[in-house]
Image 1 (cartoon, rainbow, N blue to C red):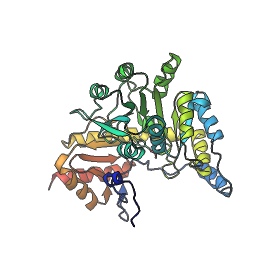
Image 2: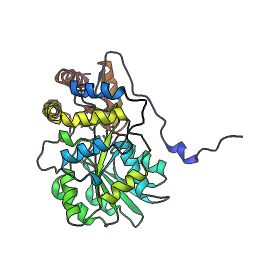
Image 3: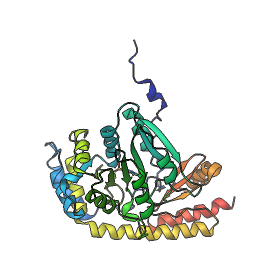
Image 4: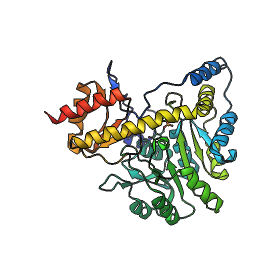
Length: 356
Ligand SMILES: *Cc1c(COP(=O)(O)O)cnc(C)c1O
């Protein structure tokens, strides 16, 4: 007898551990270079003494702290074990067999996997020639079976952002029963004032009686807590409640909750670091443009090199220089912005790549 696992799981990629090269600079996963602040380490240490107890499954202290910092009502918030978990909860909360989820492609790698695991159908909409989300095509891809649309702003892995007007226009075109999820994992690195804060966009729509927007944020990127797994969603109370119903109980652990609260209290200090990374992003992009690379404008903590067939060669060349970047074979390379020294090492590698 053989255990019958789902046949469709064969279509899913197996987990491939990230390459680790001793002494290498890791610019592959959009992490921030700085470790947790002393106040955050202290909160983690203090919470660790209580781990014989279950965490607060409602994360009430974190939710209240978020509510204060974002100036939103607590019943509009749901937390998750990383915003990747909230992506899954959103699909679980809206879709049953055969319902459709529309998303841009290439975009966040978790979208297709989550949609398939939940048992919904993926509708991938190619990016434009300039590596941007194609909102007209995304709107056209919506059918009576569509329940949810992911918009990643700025987009991972291309870094390209969506502006206020195009988002508002898109939201106006989407049927009211289709939930539009603004995935803002990189919001804190945005410097262009034309890129709206999704929470503001959503708040205004809620006030106008429209409820089909949700915004995802994470503590993994700007707040530097990727290893602890905590994110949140801002949505209407009924969507937030649905997310809590499909929440895997206790999945945001007590240490993560304490670290997230402490990071919010240290927000200003962390945002100074983000501003530095955004400045470095522009310096790295300018350096690459000077070298003749095509680099779409990025508003995230990474840049995209659409190298097509040269992707594998470039990735290997970086590895030879002890720099780990993220290659998407046949498409391009995503390079996370590190600290100044790391970025300089990368620019040296990008320069020597052109010389051989
Ligand atoms: C990194 C990332 C996330 C999720 O990160 P978590 O660590 O699960 O919070 C979500 N969306 C996008 C687009 C990302 O790049």
